Amino acid sequence: MSFQLYLLRRILFVIPVCLGITLFAFVIANAVPADPITANLPQSALNNEEIIAAFRARWGLDQPPHIQYLTYLGNLLQGDLGTSIKTRNPVAEDIGKFLPATIELATVGIVFGIVFGVAFGVISAIWRNTLADYLVRILSLLGVSFPVFVLALVGLTVLHAQWRWVPGPGRLGVLLDDPPFVTGLFLIDSLLAGEYETFRDALSRLILPGLVLGLYVSGIIARITRSSLLNVLGLDYMRTARAKGLRERVTIWGHALPNALIPVVTVIGLSYSNLLSGAVLTESIFAWPGIGRYMFRASTSQDFPAIMGGSIVIALIYVGVNFVVDILYYFIDPRIRLA
Image (spheres, one colour):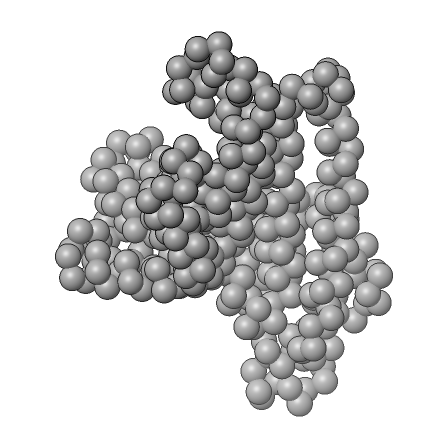
């Protein structure tokens, strides 16, 4: 199968998924048993029918549900996610402020997760049923089982409060200003502006929360890597490679691991999507202004446009990451190219 045909099939599959996401987000947001009027109007205005009617008309709450959905879908196709009831700002503008912080944190976290997870998974598979294998399996189980907020609190208490190895919560120190906005990613924007002190401070503040998220997902990655690699190591062509006299290092890293990557890439993609969707507890503990905190505040105030806009963005993140994973399959798995 040519890459162009494979890419076209993936794109055609994504379109109905995206439409289904918008419908599902609309239904869920409107099914919540809460009244945005009581959540957003002052108590003194709740007895004034004219103010309530104007509020409903302003936010389209006086229209039938199907008209609300079609109007929202039409605006969405033009890149308009609506206007937040709480902040009075366009939802796309609000998300544009919060999402880069989550992208930066999630990327650092998944890099830690891949490094630790793949390395420990390979070690566990190579030295199966040894002390190293047992230690890796125990650590993986602990990483998967421990709540992420416990890891965050322990990390802050030990590494920051007691040992002073890393700075405290926040994206930047109080004495530093945000770099000029280009991408919203402090590491990139500070480098583009030549603000190297800001870059060092932003990088140092990413280490602890990124490590917490990385340890959390590395347990899953390690377990999948171990299982997939053990399955490949037992196949006939691996025994043939050893019988030909290939070095064990070449056999594992050149033949076994590349063929064991498909489930590993899948779980990495899902883990990255989870991190990008906003780790609310982690962002709250580290005072990280990410999409998770934004969605939590929107939910508590029944800000339906913000809830729907954020939900759609998060869902599209999952679709986008899975789309990239599907494209990677084409290059990793020769069976797809030969199908």
